[in-house]
Image 1 (spheres, rainbow, N blue to C red):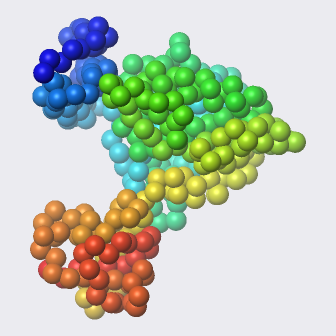
Image 2 (cartoon, helix red, strand yellow):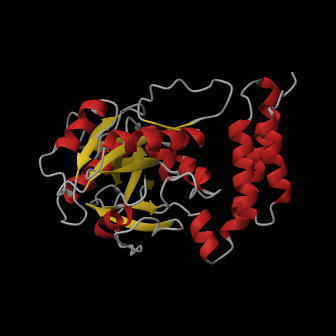
Image 3 (cartoon, helix red, strand yellow):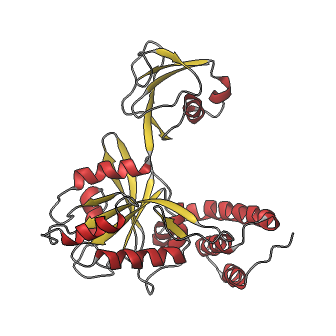
Length: 326
């Protein structure tokens, strides 16, 4: 079956050939992958491009300096979330308030020019947040689409001192150009092209300025049920602890602890799993061979009784303690 590649693919391929830096090559390859139609005729080419991306990513990870920090940020902690928004929405101030990062903060737009990571602590885990340049057409860097596509979820910052619906429309428009879809998007994705659906939490910032709550009410009326929503003030510090919990919820992950027979679990040592994961999934996360070798397991938490033997397909819950027997 012929690939039937569109003209945009060859434009991206030209960018790949002309790119000098491995990171620029990665961005071009990911764009080629996004543009490529999805059918059997492109399966081999798709696999080839993914292999090139993996190889170039390894090369890029060995480099140091600002460009590496901007373009290829290795995931750390339980998850990686990209923080996005229009100019002057307060992204950097929010990240400075809830992480250990110190991004440039000012009351004028376009203070962020590169991607900057910071670690947010929630209970006994750490979650990586990445501050990004504003989603303005003239300011979007070539490396932004791959960064957003790699993230586990997106935090969408909306300025409640201005019309939130106009902002959401503009943000969605920019994301669609990158083939990134958030929430239960009502726009049908083009079945011929690759898209990246992403979980997203919409954060109404500057709630202290929206004193009568009118703008947040507009946001809720339009988007409640499509996205999880929360209103905060990064400047005043209101709603930030609840925000951390909502960020954890949107990731849809759980923490599971392991213990050896006769010993107590280490509360600082946990396995991060997707919600609805099973004992077999947890065993594989501990070691790739444990899924097949596990004879049985005991569980504390979601079992009927503490220490009860559980089957491999037992669905785990946040905070469960498991004891694997091989």
